[in-house]
Length: 181
Image (cartoon, rainbow, N blue to C red; front, side, top):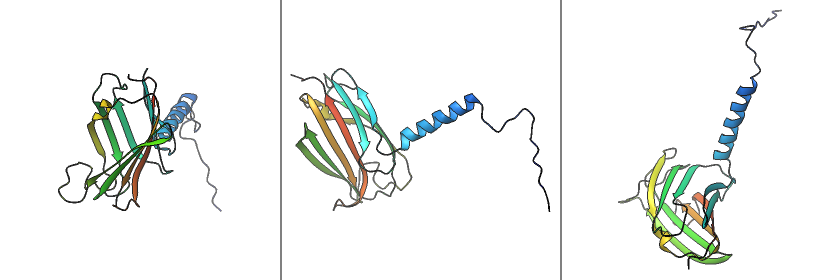
C-alpha cells in the first residue's frame, strides 16, 4: 500500500485566502451575479423629471447592456442610446414589437421588421450566435410630451414572423415625475 504524504509548498503560504482576497472574490461574484442574473432590474437613470430601469421578461440570463443619455425629458429632442448584446442564436430574421402602457392602460403598439434576410441595413442582421453587437443610435421619441405617470414598455425581438421564437424580451419601466406642460 502506498501512502501519500502531502508537503506544503511553502511554510508561509496558506490555502485559505486572506481577508483581502476573500473580499475581492466576493466583489467579483457580486458583479458577475448582477450582470448575468435574470429577473434583476437594471437601473438606467434617474433625474428630477425621469426615472428608468429594465428587466428581462424571461428567466434566462442574457449578455446585454443598454444605456441612455441624457436622463431627462426637458428640452432634449433626441436621446443617445448605447447597446451591447451577445445573441443566443443566429439572427437571419428579426422582428421587433413594442407595447407601451400608461398607468395600466394600453397606449401604443408598434412593430417593425428589421431583418428579412435580403438587403438588410442594420448591423444586427445576419449576426451569428455568440457574436458581440455594439451599437449607438438616436431615439427621437423624446420629442413626445409624456404626461406625468408610470409607463411600462415591453420590447420583444422575434426570429420569425409568427412571433413564436423570442430572441430577446425587455420590460422597461419609465416614471415621468413632472408634467411637461
